[in-house]
Every structure is written in C-alpha cells, then in structure tokens.
Image: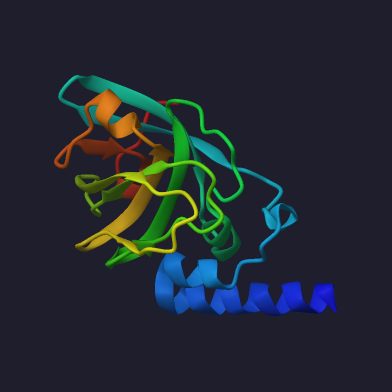
Length: 169
C-alpha cells in the first residue's frame, strides 16, 4: 500500500508540475526524505552584482521530481551554494516552503538572466505562496539572508547556460 501511495503521489506530482509549476508539484510530493532523487547534478553559476562577480555551485532541479523535492528536508545550505529551478519559457512561478527546514532567499530570474525579484528569508515549513510577480524562467534558491549579505539586487545579471550566458567552469 505504501509503494502504491508513493506512486500515486509521484504521478500526481508530475502532472501538477506540468500544469502548475513548483507549487503544484510540491502538493504531490511524498513526505519522507527517502523520496529525494538520488543523483544531484551541480553546475557553476555567477551573479554580476554591484560588488563584483559572485560564484555559486548550484544543484539543478531540471526534472519534475527534483523540482517537487527542491531543498526539502535539508538542515543546512552552505554559503555560495543553492538550487536552480529552470523552466523552458517565461511564466509566473510560484513556490512554497513545505517541509523545508531552513529559511531561503528566492531569486527570480528573467529569460535574459536579469534578477527580477528577490524574496528574502522565506519562512520554513510555510505553505504561503511565494510568487515571482512577473514573467521569469528560473528561480535560484540560496541560504536565507545570503542575498542581503552578498548585496544582491533586482537588475543584477546571472550567468549560466540556461540564460544563454555561460559561467566559467
């Protein structure tokens, strides 16, 4: 019965991701940490900010399962690391913090790599919707408070292949 329940949740999560983005996917996610996808793909990402170029190592949430899981169940997120949620076309993106144990900053990024908006210190375990408030193609989740500490602001430029700009290897 448990396997069937997880299969139903996974199928529901995949369907909701197709229609509703990361918020919808989270509804169908299993509530145990063993549901986390095993392989974590990481890439380099840079943000060109007023204070200089900031390098990050980011996990890529490029499948419905990875997007549904996000950073759930993590108890820490080292500085200058995060998770990038890329989407194929500009859209309003909504996220939430269900089963997320640490505060996060959510950096919403337009198709050209421009930071559109930053939601700072999102509340752990909250099911309140955190919206992009505009058309974006990605969300970068980083440790809560990091955006302020690093001086990130709307208008900064993100360099990564998803935006047609490659960060150095």
